Structures are given as C-alpha cells and as structure tokens.
Image (cartoon, rainbow, N blue to C red; front, top):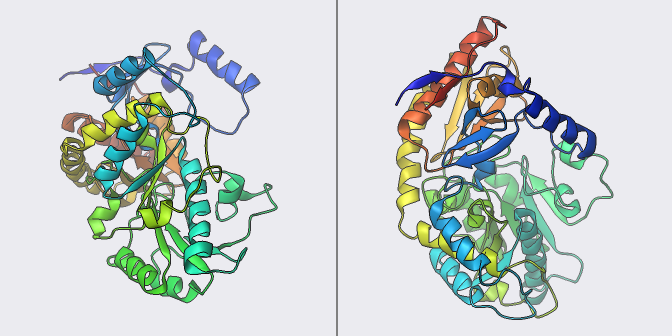
Length: 429
C-alpha cells in the first residue's frame, strides 16, 4: 500500500463545487449541526470521497451506524431485492419480513420479543413508555408516580422527553418545560444509585459505555452492581446499546463484557446497516408483552425494507466475524493510541474498535484537532471540548488504523509547535 500526496487545503473547501455546497447549506439548512467543511459525494468500505475528489478515512462511521462499512454488498443486496418487492405497508397489515426479523433479532440477543422502531431516540422513548406501563401494571406503582433513574453525562437522544434528563446545556437549554419523572445520579456510582431508588422507581436507564460523553467506560464491577440493585429492588435495567451494540465493542452487546443481562436492550444505528434507520426495543414477554394494540406504534417502524436490511445485519452478526475484527483491531488501535499519551494526549479509553482520546487542552480543542485531521484525510469528531472519538467501520484494515494514528500524531506535533504552515493531505491509494 502506497502513500500519495493529495491536494492541500482545508478539505478542498476552496474548490468552487465544495464552496457552493457549503454556501447552500449555510443559507437554506437549519443550523442544528456544525459539520466540518467537507461535502461527501461517494463512499465505499471505510473510505469516503468528497465532491472535489479527495478521499478520507471515515473514523466516525456515522456514530456506529456504518459499522459494516459504506455500501456493504451483502446489505445492499438485501435492500435491492426488497426494493423490487415491497417497501412499506404500515403495521396495519403483516408482511413477510416482519416475523423473521423479530425472531432472528430476539435470538441474537437472547430475548423473547422485539418492538421495531426507526431511530434510536424512538427506541428510548418506547422503552420509557414500556417501563412506566410495567411499573403500574406489574410493580404496582400508583398511577402517574413512576420514576426512572438515569446517569449524569448521558446521551439518549434529543426529543423533548429525553432532553429533560440531559445535563448537556446545548441539548437542554431553552427547550423547557421539562418532563418530570427522572432522577440523575453520577455515572459509575452504585452507592448513589442505591440511595436514589425508592418505591416509585420503575427503571434504571444507562449506556453501558457512554459514547457521546467520550467513550467513558464503567468502573470495574459497576454494571454488575446495577444489575444486582435492579433485581433486588424490583426495577427494570434498561441498557441503551444504540451506539455500543452490534459488534462495535468486540462483542455483540457491550453488556457482555461485564457479564450482565439487562431487562431491556435498546438497539439502533448499526441495525440499519448504513442504509435505512432501524431501531428496536428487545425484552422478554413479561415486559414487552404488556403492550396492547393501539398503545404504541409507528408508521415506518418494522417496515419491509427496514426488516430486510435488519435481517441481513443480524445474519452477518451471527457469524461472530465482525465482533472478532472489532476485538483484534481494537487491541491494535489501543496500543497505537496509548503511545501518544504524553505527546499531546492526556488519556485514552478503548473498548473494541471505539476510542475516546483526550487532547491536552493547552494544545487546542478537539474541534481544532479534527479540522487538522481532515486536512490529512482523516474524518473524526470531537465531543465535550477536548476529546475526540474514533469509531471507524469494522471493515477497516490494520494499516489504515496505523496511518490514522500517525496522522493524529503529526497533527499533535504540529500543534505543539504552533506551526500554522499549510500541510499536504496524505491519502491512501
């Protein structure tokens, strides 16, 4: 594999084509994102190409939604077949992909029932409804008194209910009034969780690994204690595996690393194979079986195209190939990133092919690092100021990871010297 010197300059943003695309977005799109100045036009595997022809290694994977690589042939083949047959019926009628998808996903994660939805936030909202219903009908909580405990630093989506228990001011500020019924305790503090549980608590909602917070790993034994507390106090344990699930961490589910089985799994992102939004609430009969017709639904949830794509994803996961790749490549990535600690990096957290890298704030922000990585052909995303996240597609190659880490090292070295001289972009051929 050779290294080629590509075009210079802030991602080719000086190209008329790129500049016009960015201008149109600035002028006509609601500014609810602050994307890096790149305009992607094509992608394959772990690589994307912008409208100016520059190639970049995708180290974000659409927040794990592209775990299996861009335009994965097995997933696209399933989608094409379904596109030629049936795309949407609504759940008013049955279709031939729905039952098999639910059965296969339930088997994959070891639960009995599946509630298919579309987005991750919908899955979270659905789980909140189901947990409250369980609390009233099974636990005997007085009507309207059910509460759910969440963790500080959480990210579960941006609906009005979910931002009510967010502590991210960008997500929460100016969107009140806020939904009641949620209590926040520090992530990783089992004692605080135990103190917060009372007779009205119906569920504990956690990300096993906090992704948006910077790939924050749970302290040793923490998730096991959460499971014990929930069992002892008759409280549902809801694991939001929307980013961490489906092979990202080297296991099918991140909870497997810690030997815990929650009552409810929330899945999404990778479940749609990078093709369509697919999410799901997965639990046993004693929880999801409480729903009755008309109490919850979605026009597109569980549609034929989504189920066909989801079945392809489940089939691919059933072999263990992608979990193994994430483990082995993740070990390599972790070693390479650890070597940067003290060289512009203050800490590294990895689980599978998922890393949070804390940048020395004296050098600059995570955003500045990501902008300079972009100039070198690597796409990454910052979070919470001085942290960048790396989550390349699971089809990435070992030497591509090494190349990306080398680019990060070069950026940090450049920033430590306060060298603002434009540098060439180095792209893999």
